[in-house]
Image 1 (cartoon, one colour):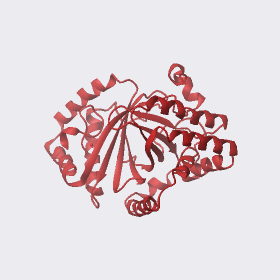
Image 2 (cartoon, one colour; image 1 turned 30 degrees about the vertical axis):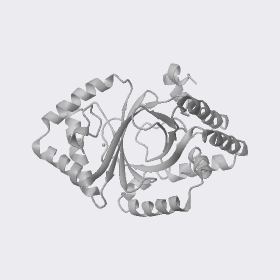
Image 3 (tube, helix red, strand yellow; image 1 turned 90 degrees about the vertical axis):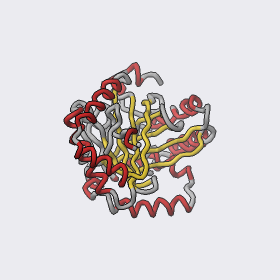
Image 4 (cartoon, helix red, strand yellow; image 1 turned 60 degrees about the horizontal axis):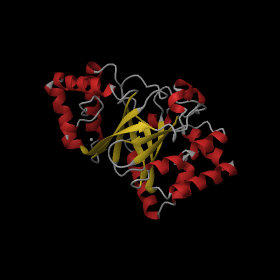
Length: 313
């Protein structure tokens, strides 16, 4: 795996569902038959390559409250693509979702990431430790008619501001990830990179990712990143890489450290990474996002870590 010059994974030089939140949105999206067939086919293919342990990790646990303090086993990600000029209006309507969940005392929290580069998007990222936890979040909506009605109203209103929307299910790959898990209540910016792998080339990509991790550990021991493998919602075989910083100014040091890491990398390791980028990676893209407090739904414990930020709703 290549690394960006700012230290987040991915280097441009090397040429980048059924939750309390998502159930309501996916039910209202009214997926077409073609979409469903594509999802079914991708589900079958990608499950051939995802280690079973990643699916079963934490299967008996339920995220009861607060934000995770270690890499969650699963992520449900809801991507909304915005119409030009509708950012503020969309954000105002979107604030109704966390208000509705708070009124219902939902313990299923999520973060909203607004794009700073690339297409105008908002990613709503919701962690789960198991399908059992996700099933409970579905039940919360189904058993609460008032909540269901409010979410449908909000979703219909969203149609004025959105070009499209889709959902992604991803499972953790801690074997490819590195470093201390960040305090999500303090993180303000994310770098999210997507690798799409050529069919049958997962092994080569993952071998390169481990070489990259070894070099990252030596050259940038204080930094970290998390890798997830997509199960559903995207064509082909995809990996998502999440990097995070608390302060945007931290990127200056990460860029310098990243350049130093590449400069000290052995020719053998560089060759492995370059070969993977040429032979195994079909496509990659990397974009930056900021955490949007008003569109996020977080616990009171999380808000208490930075009331000035989380209280600005």
